[in-house]
Length: 168
Ligand SMILES: CC(C)(COP(=O)(O)OP(=O)(O)OC[C@H]1O[C@@H](n2cnc3c(N)ncnc32)[C@H](O)[C@@H]1OP(=O)(O)O)[C@@H](O)C(=O)NCCC(=O)NCCS
Image (cartoon, rainbow, N blue to C red; front, side, top):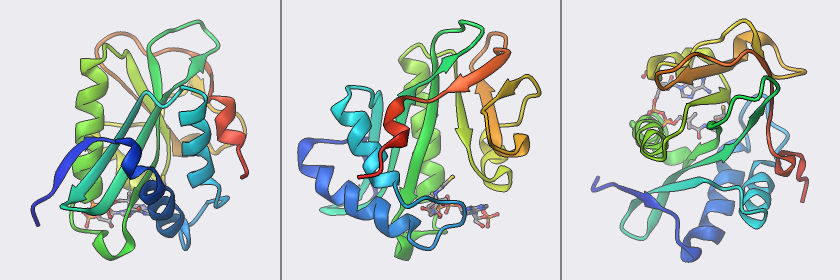
């Protein structure tokens, strides 16, 4: 597979929507609104990074990153997700390559760190871990993970952009 990872272009948008809906169709812990979240983030100018993994014209994967706020006033923190891989291409390393590229690109942007909500069994391998004191309201603490890029980790409550409430 000759896979390439690059930022999205306008021509990718419909395929990202379809891929995201397909990837989350049978996923656990989903509201099936992930594709709407990505479009709402883009419309709000909050899609800080939107990376696609492509093999020629075929979209294999996608990851979105957007700014989050932390109640202690820390700046430069981003939320990773949604992240999706085409169901028929899962388990072949596409998601891992998207994760690594997203983290590299975030650091290049000067980010302080990254948070995400997900299965620790998957995300620990990239350096994410739950941190007592850095919380997302309403979710089990072991599923909310953070990774700092050098400085101290914030202490407080994290808030994602309102686009995460999008339902259509
Ligand atoms: C999660 C996802 C992005 C991973 O992408 P991928 O290309 O399949 O992942 P990779 O091939 O890089 O890694 C595969 C590894 O991840 C594990 N894995 C995949 N999805 C996982 C999950 N939801 N929870 C725990 N582990 C998971 C696999 O068991 C495999 O583990 P191994 O390397 O120990 O064998 C992809 O499976 C996906 O799109 N899933 C549906 C949507 C989703 O759940 N997104 C994440 C929401 S937090």
